[in-house]
Picture (tube, rainbow, N blue to C red):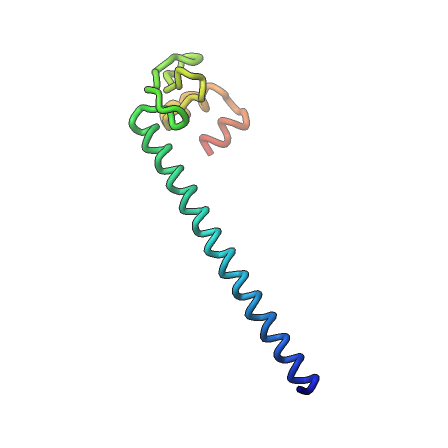
Length: 103
């Protein structure tokens, strides 16, 4: 076999290997994205049903600095609705938070 044919064969094998590798990682990325989307949907569904996305406990409405927020009784976080964010942003005056939220 001539050197030219060996070089072309080697290049073709390298191209196929690279394509196979790219396909593998593309499929892996798709699976990971779908898993992340499913987790995000379930967390959003839980929060939308008044449950903590982390532990599933019913959220409690608590007053934090004059704003009613949904809070996890197990200290996993608080959730603020858009109108509550507006109240907080207006109270902040000209801070970075009010500029971010009020545009």
